[in-house]
Image (cartoon, rainbow, N blue to C red; front, side, top):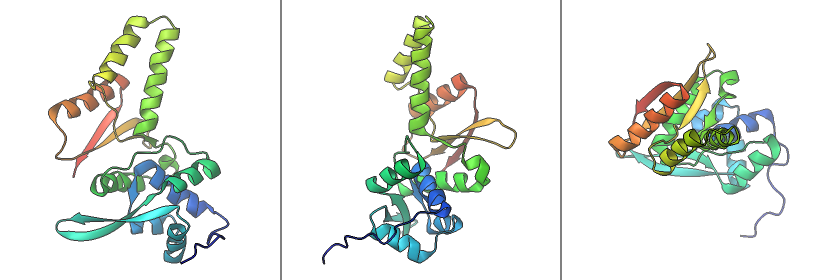
Length: 200
């Protein structure tokens, strides 16, 4: 079949921004999540046809379910139209959907505060480089070494709650070893965040 040269969707609205931002920040989202952003099923279908997002099948408790994530082109669209950067690296649907549940449980204005794992890492690396500029070489080297040896690792996301407290959020799976858990706890305690975890 010949590929349509004209896209199905030529204009983007705030509801698209909400859906793209959610997928950009959490990896995978459910159909209910997309609908809660205001997308109707025909719009979702056209976003898939235009190559902005894809439907992903996964198994949970022996049942096949479906969710959605942005394609490379979708992430580029999000960056171009809404200035989004540091996309969350999509992992397994079950893991990411638990992040999306948390993200969507927040009121819209708090969702805006959500930082991805990639963003958190960039900011931490920037802090290390600022320590160097300020002459704190020993401290900068300590954190850099810890990062390189994976003694520090970033949580899945950070958001600001209604009291203005920054909360680190982590979805734990059975594949996490003690060291990995400890490396995340170390980062959270260095940064002074409140820590919230959920096991899936």
